[in-house]
Amino acid sequence: MILFVGLVFIFWALDVSLSSAEGFERVRALLQENFLAKFVLWGLLSALAYHCVAGIKHLIMDLDIGVNLESGHRMSQAVVVVSLVLILLAGVWVW
Amino acid sequence: MVTNITNFGRSGLADWLLQRITAVILLAYTLFMVGFFLLNPGVDYEAWSGLFQCTLMRIFSLLALLSLAAHAWIGLWTVATDYMKPTGIRLAFQLVVILALFAFVVWGVQVLWGV
Image (tube, rainbow over all chains, first blue to last red; front, top):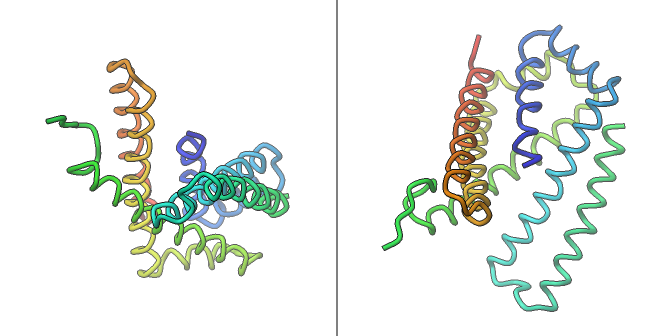
């Protein structure tokens, strides 16, 4: 739901940043100086990172890989670890 | 025979397959955009608007936009049918989701091709 609601911000930023040079500048400045904008962006990137990693795990399991208890458990742990790494990287990228 | 009228595709299997195809498309689009920003740290307006002028990017973006609408519809439909037992609440939620998705698609097309 975070991603779905977050879409509003993404579409707004895309719209404004493509509308004109001033619009681009407004979005760029917002993402560089405004704490709340950075936090929202970081939150969305984190939600997206986790969503993608968990989704990839789903696709892998659809190929009948890691569908028993042990490997399934390991894959889920890997998803959390990889997601955390990406979330930290996104944080570094945004800040 | 159980028929459902608020899902996206003709059948559960169609939704299942489309969910995965749109996921791969959206993953590719996400990786492309992250790659673009990493490779162009100081992206300026000319580069950014230039990217979206090129036809290939517009095709890819429209594909991603429509994939996003289908992916989100199927995904949130699944959530709704799993957790929202009262019919009224579930249908209201699905209506809001579908209207929002329609608005995003129109907005996206307008951004890509609007003057």
